[in-house]
Image (spheres, rainbow, N blue to C red):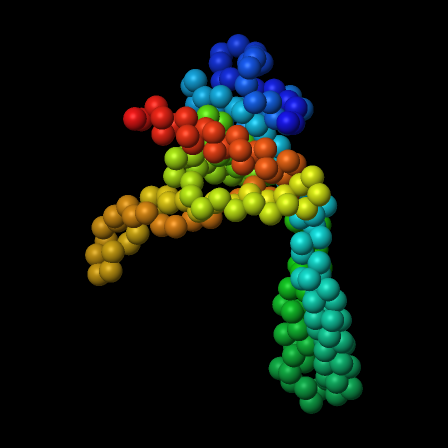
Length: 221
């Protein structure tokens, strides 16, 4: 069993519920990011963040590929610049030819920075489980909030490495779809994947979510 607190969305301060599964959760300041997204009467059962170091390591293939890519792009620009500099008068409009390599350098620099970006994004990502939903908050300059009803989750998958692991589900979410040759929009259920990546004690979190799903189904019977 892991340790932590159970939070309620109330008008007053947070309260700890007794007799509930307890999960290792974030500090009050960090958990408040998820608590702010709770609906009236909704309970926050667990919240945490992904493993930022693992998120950065997951982009190492891109980083390694970017090294020769960027080096070749810089080499190409250098050689092209040396070629046109020998006879700038005869080069004419081709004097700008080396500039065509700049987009490839920028792409390479972007790939080289992918581990830093992944680490930073993971630090800004918060996962939450309530008695109704899964909540994912990316607390960037433009905050992004994703929520998924527990009863719509299906086909859970868990992978573990040490004390951490990943949880993945499939879910159906209604989205507007433009019908061919018309301007009308019709909601349709589109398969989607939701994942908690690099979380602590994924088995316990999965068990907690399954218990809540069963409780929701029991209430509807």
